[in-house]
Image (cartoon, rainbow over all chains, first blue to last red; front, side):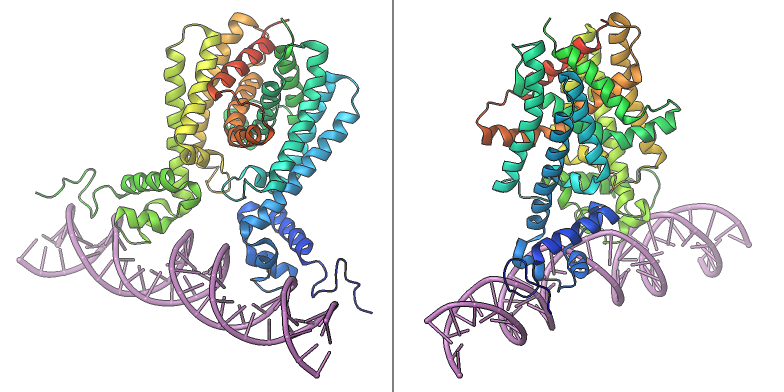
Length: 206
Length: 206
DNA sequence: ATTGCCAACTTGACACTGCCAACTTGACAA
DNA sequence: TTGTCAAGTTGGCAGTGTCAAGTTGGCAAT
């Protein structure tokens, strides 16, 4: 009674997914800096050169992980958006979801923006980026429709995503800053909500 | 007529600074991914283990570079702020200066946020971060005094810095997005100015 | 002037990395 | 049974960071 092959009857069963899972384990455990093809192969119980047969090189595997991370972001934001009827609250909720996912899986989400580690021209990655952008854009568009029909939605969407990503990027540094400067650091969710209120005021038609 | 020793009469003259300059050359040339202690040592004309005597390890050298990068940002923003009398224009100018420096020296500025590569507890780095934050904070404070004295200045400063950094981070990805989605991408300076206008509206007292 | 000392630097090694070429294994089809 | 080809292994190369031990050169005190 051997393990039933998942896709076809080849050696491992489903090595690509096993490698991706192993890679996520490594990254969750030791951060993106601790990632290495050989370590991943070791955890998956295969030889050090096996990953190359499925992902080409390290960038190939990481690109695949980046696609998954964008999916994670997209799903979380879409769910958060769905749960909030009010457009303003919805934008805040989407922002909180983005930051929450990025904080819960820091290494995984960092891959998305490590343009030195992934193949930025990969069609799947580009498509995932577009799809994720579209979720944010939808929320911004709803907001604009209600508050400011003349708003440049693409620019506003970029503003929102930039701010969300900036918050993630700066969060740790700010935590350090708060500790050393003595100023209190409000919880990030509260900050996101404050930010959203400020941004929404800015997006409002004058 | 040997080169006059700068600090004291030891072997090289001023190896630490020579190493930092070499490191900047490498990073400017090949990006942060191309950085390696041995390559830096090679360019400085010393043995591969020489850097360790001055910086301990790779993180030590990169931390030192991060401090310099923060100084670069700080100087550029302070100069930009000084040249603009109007508080709103000043914030926009500071934002443009931040993004300009980050774009002119991408590798150098990326080091600042690569918490996996630097020693985030290093006192010089913390101090440099605080000093740079203070520049942004000053601009925001001026704006608040004029437009909304009740504003939480620390939070607003974090919002501004997060947005600036997010713009830098997202810029390349957005460029890709614009190319693949067919939407036009306005020049970044224009985007910054747009963002500032939106933010300022948001910071205004209601 | 000789001595001793110590920071600055070199040398050599170890374990690790990504990647490549050549090889073996296993499944499936003719 | 045989052929074929993807899947996975083995071994090697060049490169990396870091450590231990050795070397060099200047300076201060004897």
